[in-house]
Each structure stands twice: as C-alpha cells, then as structure tokens.
Length: 70
Image (spheres, rainbow, N blue to C red):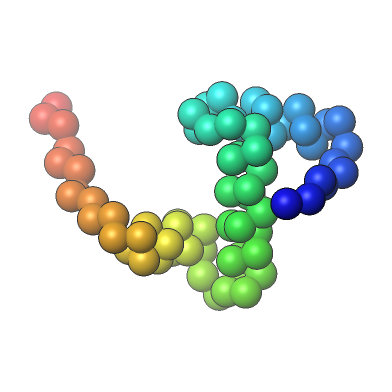
C-alpha cells in the first residue's frame, strides 16, 4: 500500500462525496480511481453500464423498482 499525494481541494471533494456515499474517505477515493480506470479502459460504455457490469460480476442482482402510484 502506498500514499497518494492529492491537492487539498480534491481531498475536500472526496471527503464531501464520502459522506453522501456512506464510504470512508479512502474507500471513496478508491472507488473514484477504480471507476476512472474502468472508464478509460471502456470508453464506449457509460458510467451506469460500467457500474452495472461490476455489480453483476460481484453477484449483485437488483429487482426492478416499481413506479409509485400517482
């Protein structure tokens, strides 16, 4: 494991995003790094397609969300 040097503004953005995502700051940074790498490796896929593929690979199965009655 190593240390990654990032500027203060990016660290602040990671900290804010980690609260929303219920992740540690390190887990949020790792998520962004992994997704960024996958996006570069799969430039024709959308973010949602990449995340769905990763979820399927991890064995996550989601049930469709039913629309709420108006």
